[in-house]
Every structure is written in structure tokens, then in C-alpha cells.
Image 1 (cartoon, rainbow, N blue to C red):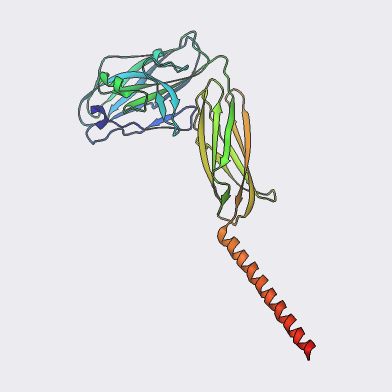
Image 2: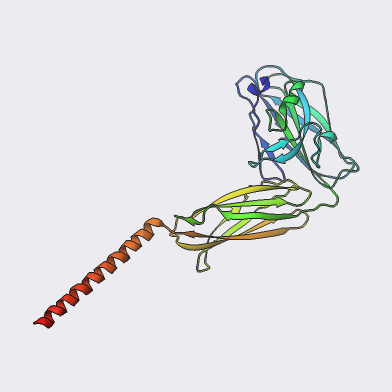
Amino acid sequence: MLFMKYFSFVCVVSLSLLSFCFSADVYSTGEVGLKMQPSIVEEKVEPGQVLPMVLHVTNIGKQEESYYAVTRDISSLAEDGQPVFAKTGEKTGYETSSWIEITKDPVLIQGGEIKDVPFTITVPQNASPGGHFGSIFFIAEADHLKEIGSGIGYQVGTIVNLRVAGDILEDAQIREFRANEKIYEKSDVKFLTRVENLGNTALRTRGPIEITNMFGKKVGSVVMNEEGAAVLPKSDRSYAVVWKDEGFSIGKYDAVMSLNYGDEVKKTISSSVSFWILPQKIILLVLAVVFGLAAALYISVKLYIRKKMRELKK
């Protein structure tokens, strides 16, 4: 694809309700590139509300380029947090692309120039409450839209994350919480969880995992999803975090995870898991010492008995 040699697109979910961050320098050569600000439009809106806005589009290359604005809906998030964009005409249940009015004419930008591109978001009166997610892209040629498909694509864009007022449902459940192993050589434990969003708006579930030893003493803690990566409505998402402790660890351990979420009402969901830390080298050393002591005791007893037997024969 011709467009692929010009642009690369990178996005991750970050701290905000559904923040997708685009790379600041989006280009594969030193001659061509594009940057858009803001990288995300995030608003709480009312049905019927009209939001006039402006995108600041920068041609960070050296030559004049023409770009076309294209709006897309987000259908889901991939496991790594990157958005998957809906195909043309695909219904996601939380569309926004049809709400966005932006020029369909080519936007000509000189090398190094910043162009202000106005657009308007009009929330329908009958918009369903909860999250609605989409994006505004700028691409080099309008007919490249059909080549984008439902994947991540090779464009530069701004994410649109709207939360429509009304009957907001914030509900989540932990589908899985586990350590990636049952037994560890040392305290280098990877915790894995999968959270399902049962509501109608994006959720950020984050919270502590507290680790206690076999005596009930707290020995450490980590935060699951510390960056606040979001999970979309009616979908689930995996998170992971690693606990390390430089001190001596041995025996059975319990970990309790408490995830907090909710903008309307603060809620908590919890789960627990157990695992063992059995340092092989230390265990082998202890066994060797025990075996050595047992062998020494056996030999000593045997020699003592022989000595007594000789004394009795005299």
C-alpha cells in the first residue's frame, strides 16, 4: 500500500477514561509526517448538545501535502489496548462517526505549517446513554479508506470519546485472577486478571494487590492496571502486573486484589489467589545439611554400638 510507506500509527490506552495516545512524530521517512492535536476529545455530553471544536494539524514534513478527513467508529480494543476500527456501515452500539461534521474537501498543508481544521459534534436527541467512541483521521488519499479495513490502519488520528448523560450503568466483574505459576523459585510473581465490563460506558478498573505470607503478615503490594487502561462496554480485557521482593521468601503466600471503578458511584470488586515460593538452592542446601547430620548421627550411633559391643566381649 502506497500510504504505508508514509505513515505509521501507534496508539495505547492511558490514564484518562479512554485515552488513546498517538505518537508525536508519525512518519517513516524524514521527508513526510503529520501530527494532530488534541490526540483525544473527551467530553461528557447531553442529548442534542452541539460541540464546535478545532483540530490543529501539523505537517511535520518538508513538502506540501493534501489530506482528507475521515471519521471512523471504534468497535473494540485489542488485547494490547489498541483500538480496532469498525468497517464502513458496521454497527458497534456506541457510534460517533455520524455525529461528526468535518470538511470533505482536501486540506492543503505546507511543510512545517499548522492548519486549524474546525469540526462539529452534534449529539442526537435519541443518543443512547453511556460511552460512544470514534476517531477523526487524516489520510493522504480519500480512496485509501477502503484499504483500511477493521484493523489499526496506517493513519494519523484523534480519538473521540463521548459519555452521553442518562441512565449510566457502571458494572464490572473479575472473570479471572491468577498467578502465572503455582510455585516460584523466588518472589518474581506475575499476576494476571481479566475484567469484564457489564455496563454501557468505558471503565477504568484499578487497585492494589496485597500479598501476605503463611503467618498472615503483609509482605508486599502492587497496583493492578496502575495506568488506568480502560475496558469498553460489553467487553473484557486482560491486565498484568509483577511483584518482586528482594528479601528472603519461602512458603505459601496469599494475594488479594481489590479493583476500584466508577464515576457515578465508587465500587470495588475483589478476588484472591495463593501461590508458593520454594527456593530450590536453599531447599537443596537444607536437605543436604539435614542428610549430612542424619548420616553423621547414624555413623556416630553405629560406632558407639560397636564400641560398646567390644567392651562387653572383654
